[in-house]
Length: 226
Image 1 (cartoon, rainbow, N blue to C red):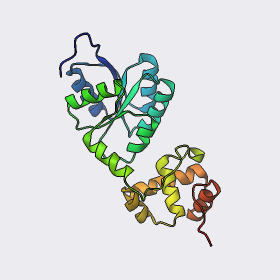
Image 2 (image 1 turned 180 degrees about the vertical axis):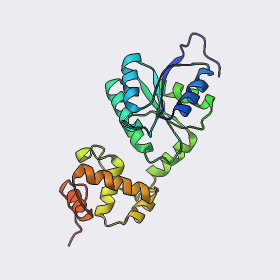
Image 3 (image 1 turned 30 degrees about the vertical axis):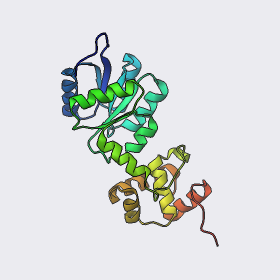
Image 4 (image 1 turned 120 degrees about the horizontal axis):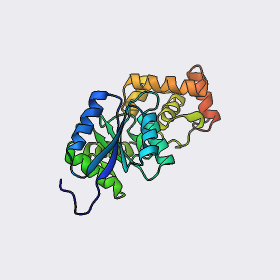
């Protein structure tokens, strides 16, 4: 991809906890016209620190990182440094954090098998105010928006619950089993169990019955009539 005359390269920070992957992405970006890598981070906290220090145009953000994951780092960056855009890089287009990352402020979303031209297009798109979504991610987004069975939940949930944890809680209140919740949300049963463990810890409930009462008390679900 050729660089337009007089156009400055986009200054980019790469965040990924896997050293080999991070160095590979940095090496690839170094070969691309129109992108200048100004820093690399091994976790979300370091990514936020580098953004504060370097004021990059874009962060290419991994989602699964220790201490501070990509969703939380994206939320902090977009809140504290709104001039910096975030493009998420993940392994799978159906990553369970896809929608959480977009709600947190990510403007682009690419899978890690994206080619150099695709990365440059995504970076340029978010800098021009457009969304930089890979075709596979666009399909998944449209599928999600067309799913009537996914409960609609408030973006600001109580006790720090994520959108997906709140969805799981609402489905528990509807009486669904873990397997039924997994099918409804198109995720694995193991993922559902992880969300349940997280929401139990955040809300202080000890079992599903308490979780149902919590959902009723917070107005996230309503008892059946009659």
